[in-house]
Image (tube, rainbow, N blue to C red; front, side):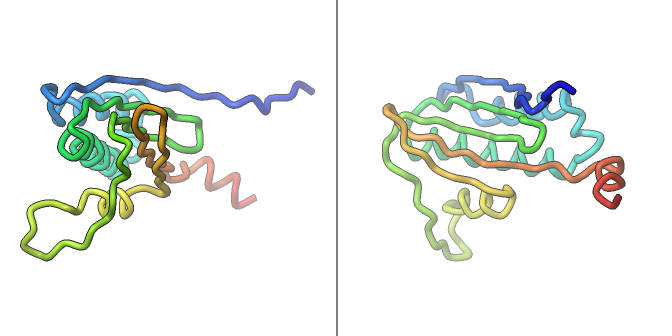
Length: 145
């Protein structure tokens, strides 16, 4: 029997200068979620991923004053959404009052993603959020056996 334990993954990357706007990041991400078929199997998850991308790219542009490198990696368990920016300063979750117009980006990412983390890099930082799709009917049947 052949060992089939090798990891299989697919990924996409896109550089988004500040002038590109967050809308471009959302549209680009949504097109890749469609390519995975998630628009049919997990439309609410697609919306969550797109909202998280919007928040993370906005943070890179507004707070880091940097272009954003957006990387999507699907490893058959988790969609890893990584946004890299050029600022070494780590983002901080902050308390906001109800009237504040901003300051909720990381709170949203925390609520939407299954997991997320921040990692310093030699030229900035990466913020990565993990999204696990709901189990398919076939997958649930196998788990029940």
